[in-house]
Image 1 (cartoon, rainbow, N blue to C red):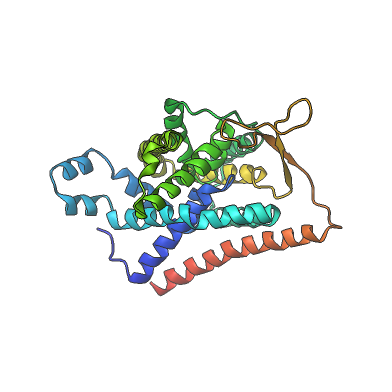
Image 2: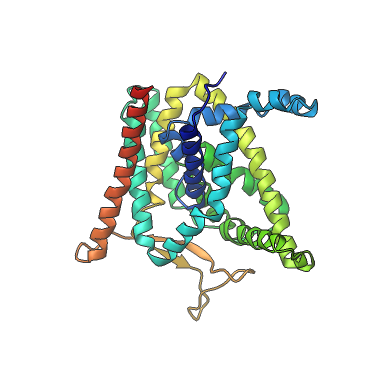
Amino acid sequence: MHKPRTFLDKLFLVIKGLLMGAANKVPGVSGGIVAFVAGFYEEFIYSLQKINLKAFKLLVNGRFKSFYRYANGQFLTLLIFGMLVSYFSISKLLDFFLERNELLVWSSFFGMILGSIYYISKDFGHWNKKTIPIGFIGLIVGIAISFLSPATENDNLIFIFFCGMISVSGMTLPGLSGSFILILLGNYVLLLVDSVNALYDTLSEVFAGDFSFTQNEARMDTLTILAVFTTGSAVGLVSLSHILSYVLKHYKNMTTAVIIGFITGSLGVVWPWKRTIFKKDLEGNVLLDSNNNEIIVNYERYFPDFGNPESWWAIFFIIMGICVLLGLDWYGKNRKRAA
């Protein structure tokens, strides 16, 4: 039985959902890190695990209250509500700042991930002959993923379903960025920009009493893609949670070691000082995909120029990002003392 949540607890849970949703939208940042650092990762995984055959039977038999209690419904509802709101608010804000000053945004996230590495590892005193090698493997895999080249866009619905299952890993696996995986699969713009914008425009039109979108073939195709992607994400979220709950229960120390290594390796993805390399033709013109989006080939990373004032601003934002995580740590400790 879960303890009753106060209004403040519920508000913070929605805010955590907002942060998870925003983190999942940004390439290189994992919503799972937010859950891990904010202290609700295990409850999140175990709650998702409750979406099983027993829950389905309760739902089919009309025992909605029993289903709600069994699946920790209040926790999941508030968290998922925050995530959904984030996709149409905070994530739009992040897109705005990424367009205006990409360096400072990446610097903030780089600092936050540095802080999360400290947060997760500071109390982990189980380094031994088993956890050290597996932590090193996590590090190597994280680095390797950071330097993979993106594929081209693919709107095949079976592949879209697969993208949904894979991308949702960012919510359940701290350090693995679902949005960056979508970039590697070539479908980030299609699934997290074009599809979300299409849904936003459609909902705006529906609320205004305009249903003309049903005659727009391109819009309907994009909404179909979003529906298949969402279904794949739901299937992936539930199936991964069952695997992870088992792993956390039986191999918690080894899992934490992998997470620490993986997050450390993923720092290469959010390294602030990088240039986007676009695909070009023989004349040097940037090539576009079928939706008129620039095709990303890879990222060129470079060391900061300390003679440039902007580099010092970036370092300041890295420090601020670290302070955000230290602040969360301080909040968590004081909340435990108060309890």
